[in-house]
Structure formats: C-alpha cells, structure tokens
Amino acid sequence: MKLRRIGKGSESKIELQMTPMIDVVFQLLVFFLFTFRIATQEGDFNIKMPLTTYSSSQTVAAESPVVMMHVRLRADGSGRLRQSGGIVVNGDRVLDSFEQLHNYVIGVIGGHEPSAKADAEVELDCDYNLHYEHLIDAITAVSGYVDKSTGQVNRLIDKISFTPPQAAPGS
Amino acid sequence: MRFRHRRDGPKAEMDMTPMIDMVFQLIAFFMFAISFSQNEQDERVMLPDSVLAKPANQPLKHPVTLHLTRTGNVIYGGQELPALERLRPYLVNERMVLQGRNRTMEDATVVIRADRLARAGVVQKLIQMCQEEKFEKFALRAQEDIGP
Image 1 (cartoon, rainbow over the protein chains, first blue to last red):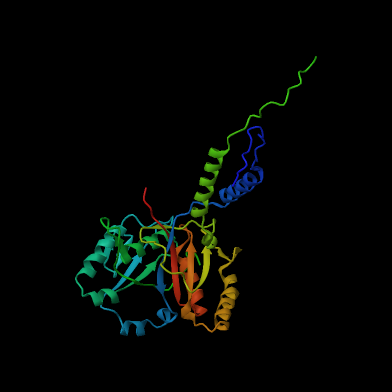
Image 2 (image 1 turned 120 degrees about the horizontal axis):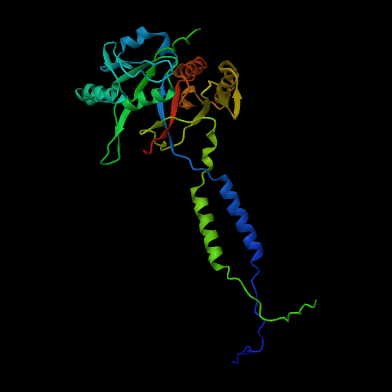
C-alpha cells in the first residue's frame, strides 16, 4: 500500500475556531459569578409542640418526665439577656450565663438513667422583648454540645417547649 | 504623509491555552460550589449562630418556611406581610394543600427563620398561630457557628 505523503509545501493548517467556545465559556463564568453566594450551613432545632401543650398544663403535669426544667430568660431594656440573673431555672436557681446553664443541665442530666435522659424536658419562658438569638443560645445550651476532640455532637435534652407567650410591654 | 503598506507576513498568534485552562478551572469551581437548594433563604433575615446547627441528613417532608424580620414582619413566599395576622389565610391554605394530598399535620414542619434581633415574644406568637391552625412540628433555624 502506498501512502501519500503530504508535501511540505502545503502549509495551510486547519485552524480551530475558538471564538464561539470562548464566548460560551465566558457566559457560563459570568452566570456562575453572579449567582454564587457564600452562605454558611443552616441547621434546625426541632420542637414538637401541639396546641394541647398550652391549654392543658394539668394533663401534661400528670405525665411529667423525670427531669423537667423550667427555664426563665429575662431581658433588659434593649432586649439582651440581663447581665446578672438573666436565667432562672425552676424558679430558684439564678444563673448569669448560658455556659452556667449548660453546666447545670449536664450536672442534672448526668445523675440520671439514659432513659430518663431521653425523657427529660425543658420548658422555656422568655421575656417578650428578648432577642431571638438568646433564645437560640438557651436551646443550644440545653440541647447538647460539640465534643472538641472528635467534633461529634453529644445530645443532652431534645424535648423543648415554650410557655405561652408573654404580653407585649405596653399592651 | 505616506503610510507603508504592510505585506501579508506570518500572523502573530496568541496562545489561548493558559487562559482557557484558568477559565475552565473557575467554571468547575463555581459549578461545584453553587447550590440551588438555598432558595428558601432570605437576605432580609440574619439568622442567629449556634454550634449545634448542622444541616439535616434528610430533607423535611413538607416544610412551610416562614421568615421573621427584626421588625416583626413575616415573609411568606417572598412577600413581606405587614401584620402577623395576615399570615393566617396562608396557613389555612397550607393545611388544605396537606389535606388534599392525604397527609396529616404531623407530616408538615413549620420552619421558622427568624432574625437574630427579632423578639422572642413575636416568635412565640407566630408558633401559637401555627398551633391554632393545627401545625405541631416546628424547626427553629440557626446558622452554623464556624467560630472566629
């Protein structure tokens, strides 16, 4: 078989047209640039609260769990948690920070059986003006912590409910 | 003045390869980093931080997302409602949709995305209104605290 050899004289190269591809690629780049948003991840705190929780406190009391904590969160005039005595647990234990609340919960939960731990419940009672971020701080303090060595989340109390909302100041 | 007429000599060609490499790298990065599932976020709401806020392993069955601004207005479906009570017809509508799909109220979860400076009392009132419309599962949303 005889192969034809392309002569050196024929110097006309086949040129690939890059322009349409570059056009499309830049279009894509601009689209992704404009739609890109740096967002941190979000997570939920699940709260199961049927309407009966508010209306029939006596029924709830009859089936009350082994560990039941009533956490009162008090706000100052600007909606922040009060600097001192902002947290009152079960009406008598006054705490100043969420770290203290967290340690208190660990102390209470630690002395109980795992079944009682799973059954433990926290009822949050907040001032109307309290900032929502402090409510989340309180939920974080009672519901668990992140183990710094492993990065795993250790759960404390999952059952969280609210007391009926307080009246707005001045209403 | 006379201009010299250039002859057709060898063309100067630009090497496009490094540029195309970089552009493709960028496109690949944005393609992997983009997430279209963030459509339930709203820029008017700044969520509070929590170290325990981790994304759920599986998506919620029937989420009803309510945003609450720091001024106490609810945003539902991208529309800012001037009063809390204006939300009630929408909640009734959501309930009807659930019933139409033969689902119970336990299947629905009201996702509350409240601003960090919203008042706790307003959040509680919002929860109470949802309860009155037979919703019973709630998810208070926070953003992951990634530290300083």
